[in-house]
Image (cartoon, rainbow, N blue to C red):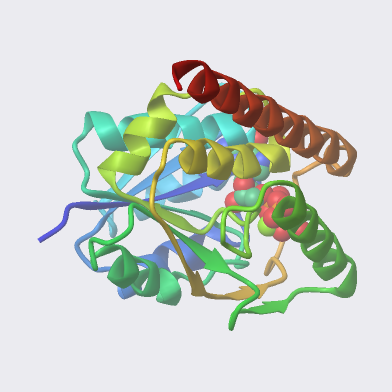
Length: 248
Ligand SMILES: Nc1nc2c(ncn2[C@@H]2O[C@H](COP(=O)(O)OP(=O)(O)OP(=O)(O)O)[C@@H](O)[C@H]2O)c(=O)[nH]1
Ligand SMILES: [Mg+2]
């Protein structure tokens, strides 16, 4: 039996977190849940604390203030390794990722021929969010596929499952990007380390309630970060070629 940890980060998700907890506990009973809340002013943390009575499998880590989604994910990866989980599942808590689809990712990872699984909104998955969001996701994923090909269709969504091999790689990594680009950089780091990938189709929805926390300025900064990652890959590849021709 694998020891699984399901993680989400919250900032002002009081309208969504109750449903997320109930649906996650229903989809994966007896599975531990980690939530990192950044002292949401809307009372998300207090609601999670109340729900811990009915759902004792929840660990809540409260940070002093809004510190970013990327650092919350870094914290969860370190936590999963330190507590010796066999699998870490990460996802958003706003209703975009469906807790009932967590078992799809777990089943794929349990075949043991891959170390990392990502839910894809292409290749059999669906993207049921509003048009502007679909255009944004499609644009970012197409650019990533062209600039950083790794054989998958999805780079940006945070609905993912990692085994300890993948977690070790990411826990040793030094990230250069934040925001959306952080999720692309994770894929690039895993790819360069030779980690084995798979994707499973998921159904992605618009957030159920509340509002987006990711500043729109991150769209531009993430595109720059993507280009920088692509340039760095080209340098790494030419370094490798130079080293192997010196050896011949
Ligand atoms: N702890 C923490 N969680 C965050 C932070 N920023 C975003 N989140 C959470 O990360 C998840 C994704 O953030 P969203 O605001 O939904 O970002 P998005 O999916 O790009 O935007 P939407 O279009 O509104 O869905 C949600 O569960 C947020 O509550 C943060 O700074 N700290
Ligand atoms: Mg969202």
